[in-house]
Image 1 (tube, helix red, strand yellow):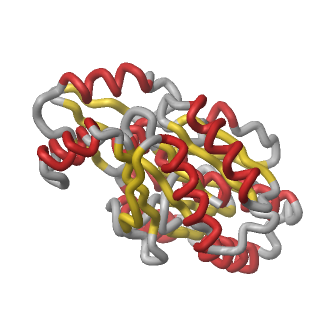
Image 2: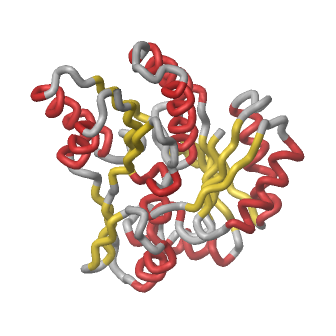
Length: 282
């Protein structure tokens, strides 16, 4: 019996970093188009090169979700598959995975496949992957597949994500922010603070000037959004480990969390977070 965890690449979890011998893991890559160059969001993608290309490109860039066929190939490789996707309100990835499930079950009705919308991205998906692996290890024969899926759905509903940006190039180029506003925010050193709503949309919840004030405002929002006692926290950073470590220090000083870990952004999250962006999930 093969347990199978499948995600899209917005989880930021590299296939090479997942080393559980009992559980198969596959990250299905999204694609990023910058000018005439397409970048595949897999383990081989060099993030500084992507950032440089986006900075140099004058026109709007774009992203594309994986095909149903790509998800189907991942599902076929396991007997019991659980798939986590970026919020369905931000991407067509969830719908592609659902269609893939229907395709696979038509030819392989014996397989078990569960698709869970993370209603978020990055760290929320990493935490779901961790919890799924723990539950799978406790049930190596897959006898409680539906129960595990139910537990993961409840866990997903308990997770929160908050992030801060200090670069707005892609928002400006894609018409989601006026150039005057974006340039003014950047020149004044103002950071946008936003969170993921329960519906999986993005909500701007504040702005702050300077790194320390931003971190304090972000951590205050964390404490107000849920009881963080014993929470596992993961900070996904876009080429900004130093900033992530400073944010970690504020979190552990202000909140009763269990742990704080770090992960580097891959292509899709880099596309949205841009240089120095920080995404916190807990």
